[in-house]
Image (tube, rainbow, N blue to C red; front, side):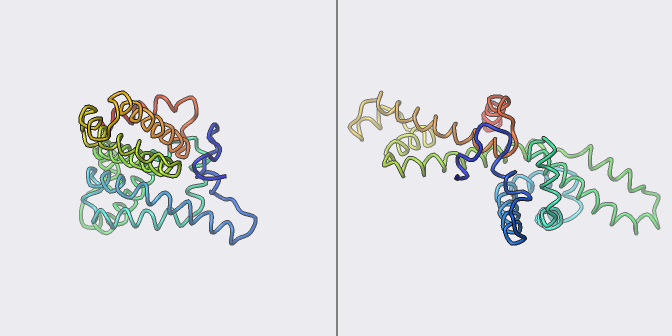
Length: 235
């Protein structure tokens, strides 16, 4: 069973099957490493935008916070195991996780500062929680990431099927904005054929997007609403 079609109609996502699985220590370590790599590849950029747009950006360099968060939390298998049983969206779990991680950094630095000032570390925690304006940037970056991945999966699938020409029509019309009339004249197809190719690819992209959302723990009953949200985020 491949990533593409693993447990497509249940909440048991591809990522969740990696967490804590394997009959031997080596197999479990390999599964954990794949899960960590998956999370880092998809979420490094969205989390960096979240940090830069929040009060955490004043604590340290963005890359240091994100890398430190990954090293600290993803090195502990319990972090993703807890997500797997939480019922939460993966992106919300990670957003909360890096916020708590940043608050920990603030508490650590504040311990020495409070010896000479009257600042309460708990007050600093409250300020971080209230000033996390990077959430919108995070959501938009995440939406772009999953749409790009869904599009890449659709392209790969179509090229394997020998239908790469249909993807090229989609790319030139939907992404580059070229009108069907121009494409039809150049490719010696009808405008209707070009429109049909674009619809086919759009359907494939949507199907892969739904799979990606399932991978992130979105329940089947909520897939349609989540796809609408993704569309709104990318405008």
